[in-house]
Length: 151
Length: 151
DNA sequence: TATTGTTATACTCTATAACTATA
DNA sequence: TATAGTTATAGAGTATAACAATA
Image 1 (cartoon, rainbow over the protein chains, first blue to last red):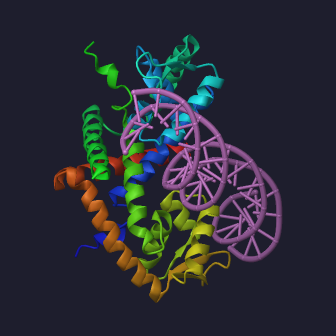
Image 2 (image 1 turned 60 degrees about the horizontal axis):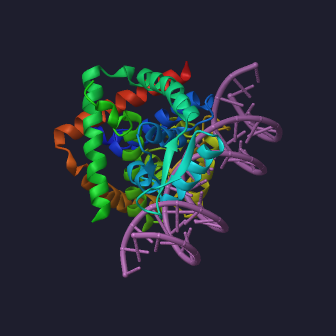
Image 3 (image 1 turned 180 degrees about the horizontal axis):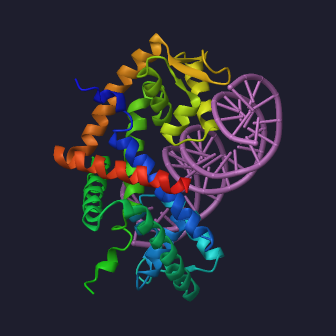
């Protein structure tokens, strides 16, 4: 008994994760607004731009933890903006590969600078070592969470 | 140059925070569904039930990081369910104190058992020490983020 | 003048179901 | 039968603006 239950909520890891995520997403969206992007569309663009032959929408859904139907809408948005295009897969006619256009790669690079700077600013509370530690802890949490969901 | 940019997104702390938060919120909502609650309404109920004289809606908004207008709706919902009630503040006629009813305290306790068990399961990937470390890192991140927003 | 609570509105995100075309 | 993609829809969460009552 040390009175610690007075902070039952603000000490809750779930609550803290939600708050921290909200702060980062909000700031990231603000820094992406000038590029006509938001966190989710930027993530899709990033994965497309950083791959050589393109990414299937199924892969995007898996990596991003989104439903395939959401990926369709995000890709539609990027296609309209001229930042990616859908190409037929040479090996599977069901699959469509999402590939960044030249404009998409430029946009990804420019937006990346801004969003990375924003994140750096938000993580400034932590030392470099702590940031790595946080990344590792979150990675294991996410990996475990996904496994648990599949059970 | 070690090829580490191939994981540019999945190594991104912002992305990991968003994923981890999503997993925890989803699981928490599932464990609260049987109690007629969701994460946000449960948080309001918790703060009301754990306070002696009640909490003002302004305080709730501050602690939860929500807009006051959202707090109104969440409190409305809990009032309808008979879990909290609004009482006039004895010192400020603008302020309305949110107080848990007896039913609300019972619901908070029961729901708390379920949601805590769910979180424990999700954090099982980490040792007790790592969980404390994660909490501390997130606490500092959230505190810093809030300060930055105020600038 | 500033603060507390409220109403209203629009947009984003999340969750599902049903469907097609291919494998 | 199962998988990749698509369409549609509803509900939850977020973001703002404007307002009344009170300090």
